[in-house]
Length: 76
Image (cartoon, rainbow, N blue to C red; front, side, top):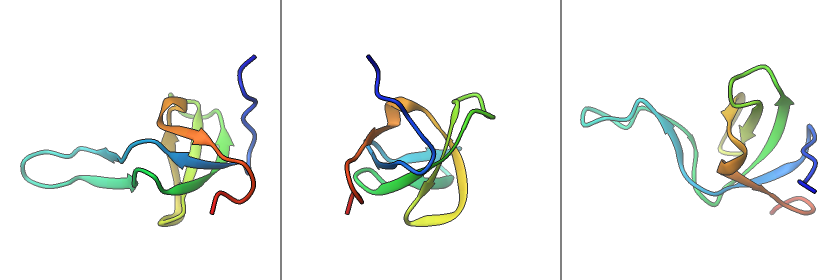
């Protein structure tokens, strides 16, 4: 049975998440591998999940389930 994902759960990113990176620049940096975040919303984007990254928590972004693992407790 798959783990249930709920708003407010703590997560740990399994890879660094960026978009539009190319030889001219790094693009947008959304989260760093090994850092923590929080589930913000379920549904509403093509990935199906929105998350906050602790390092940039003023806006949530779309994320796929394969990009993070759920953590127990605070995930500190």
